[in-house]
Length: 423
Ligand SMILES: Cc1ncc(COP(=O)(O)O)c(C=O)c1O
Image 1 (cartoon, rainbow, N blue to C red):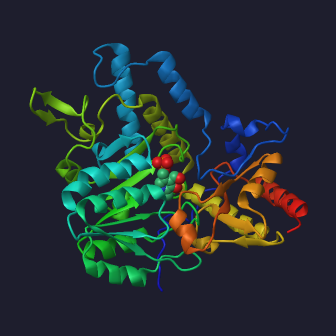
Image 2: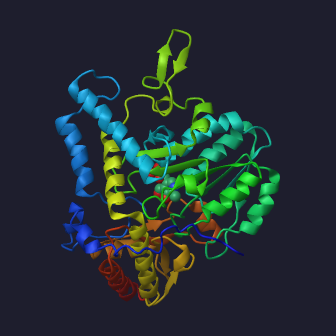
C-alpha cells in the first residue's frame, strides 16, 4: 500500500535543535519531585510544559493591562485587544493560514470539533448521510460525531488500521463510494504516534465530494503544519499541548465555510446588533467567540507560536524523530516489553508499550518513584485499544525539551519495574 506521509521539512539544512539549551527556558524542568528525583517529563502528549516567554506573557497581561477585549475605549483595553488580535495573527502564521480571520479561538481542540459538529454538522449532515472517521481517533473526534449522527439519523464509518497502526487507505477508497459529507481524522495519533498522510487523504476525500476536518492536536506541537498546503477544510488544535496555556486552542477553516456557518454559542461579542426578537451576527471570527474569551490564554498561545517559529518546526521534527528512533531502540532492550505503533519514520514522538504481566498503572507508579512521568490507561482512545485487544497501555511522549537522558531514565526505571514484578 503506497502511503505518502506529510513530513515537510523533515530533512533540514538548519543546525540541529539543542534541547539542553532549550530546557533552560522551561522552569519546571529544573524542579525535583517529592521523591527527591529530578523531574523526567515524558507525558507531553497529555500536556506540554510551558516556556518562560509564555508564562511571562500571561503574567504581563494580568499585571499590566488586564481588561476586556473589543470593548474598553481606554488605553489598557486597547492594549488587551491589540495583544489578543496579534496572537491571532501569530497563530495564523504558525499554521499557514492565509487570513487571520480564519482563526477562531476556542478553549481546546474538543471545543473546536464540537463547534464544527454543531454549527456546520447540524446544517450539512442529514438522514442517511455518512461521516468517515478512523479507528484510532481520540474520543474528542468521535463522540461529537456520534451525537450528530444519532440526532440526524446519519451514519458513521471507520477507516481501519493495520496491526501496527497504519491507516488502510484501500478501505478508505471503498468507504468514499458512500459519498460521505465529511471525513474527520487525526493528523497524528495520540496513542500510537502514527502520522497520517493528510494531503493524500484530502485529495481522495475531495474527489468524492466530502469536506475534511483534521484533528491537529498531536501534530501542531511536533511537525511543520501548513493548512494551505494540506488542503483540508477544517483544522483544530489545543494550545496546552503546544507549549501554550490551558484554555487556549483554535479552529481554522476556510473563510467561505466559516461565513456560511451559523453561530455555535450565542451571547455578547458574537453580535453586531441585537433587538428583542432578533439579532445580527458579527463578522468572522468573532461570530464564533461568544462571551468574554480567555484573553491571557490566547496571548500565551500567540507567544508559544512565536517561540516555536523562532526555533523552526522543521528542527523540532528532526529532533523528535531522532529521539523517537533512540527510544524505540533503547526500549526494545527491556525484558518483557511490547512496543506498539508504526516504524519510526511514520510516527511522531509517542511510544506506547506494555511490560508483560504488569498493569500499566503499576508501571507508571513505579516510574513515578524515579521522577519519570508517563501516562497509563486508554489515552481517550478506547475503540483503538479494543481494536488492538488491549485493556490499557503505558505511553511515553516527547517534546522539544526532551532528551536522550530522559529516555535513559525511563529505561532504567523500567529495569526497576521488571526487578520488582519479576517480569
Ligand atoms: C489527537 C487528540 N485530539 C484531541 C484531543 C483533545 O484535546 P483537548 O482535551 O485539549 O481538547 C487530544 C488530547 O489528548 C488529542 O490527543
